Length: 346
Ligand SMILES: [Zn+2]
Ligand SMILES: [Zn+2]
Image (cartoon, rainbow, N blue to C red):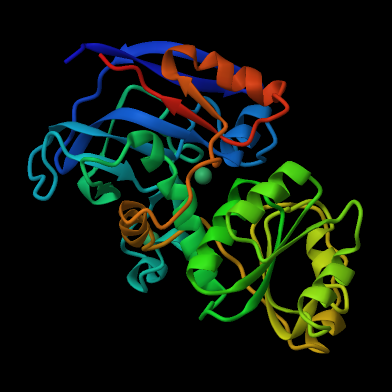
């Protein structure tokens, strides 16, 4: 194995360095991962642009990490050299009341890999063995990098209490909107997707959307009314997350009485919501953060090819050209959807 490796470090807003550092050694209970593929997520973009108020610099970004185990420390029991893995983004204490209830994603001292602690945009890194999940050996790493975003789809639809059969509005048809749509279709829902980008809406149609609406040319309320014969939708996911989007989806005629609304973002703008807007219809507004206990079921669904991965990633970028990722963040190509960094073979 090499003595040194390259890592990407965001040193401040719109600044990064590629550093040559020693390859870490796995400590007791840790495994050493050689990275093979890393997704570029919206949170990495916000981090780089300096739009994340909690961002700490310097930081190695990246929480959508897939790789191969190249060394294991003392007392590692379940993982061995050569195993293919994805890495959990949630680092939790395991001791607090939330962890004891099984809600590691809202641990009192929860840290997200790639923002609160260093992530995977580096050739090697070590993590505790319980933070990796085994992949089938024949699953391409470039696909495995998408397991984390699809785990989010599993988590937020569980938080919403989806049983199957609901009519659902997904506002925003970007990566997370497309993930939620695909998850809802697997769970047996009827889904209407709204966006202002026709290409994203066309993709939603391919992923099984029962209806699409471009809200630049048609009102959301009118489209939802048509879709539900005037009843309103049972569940709403706001994956558009622009200032005012949560208020917009609560307009009379969009949620059915008793509907559940799940905001997906971390927008800090004030919304125009009143108690009356919630209680005249007894709405449930449900929070969701990252994912919990979703990696294993998501890996199983990937192995069975239940998700449509074609069209999810628009740009695969070799790690040796990682500067292109930052270039594309600052000047996004017209057709950009999602980027995945692929690490060069030795
Ligand atoms: Zn992500
Ligand atoms: Zn905890």
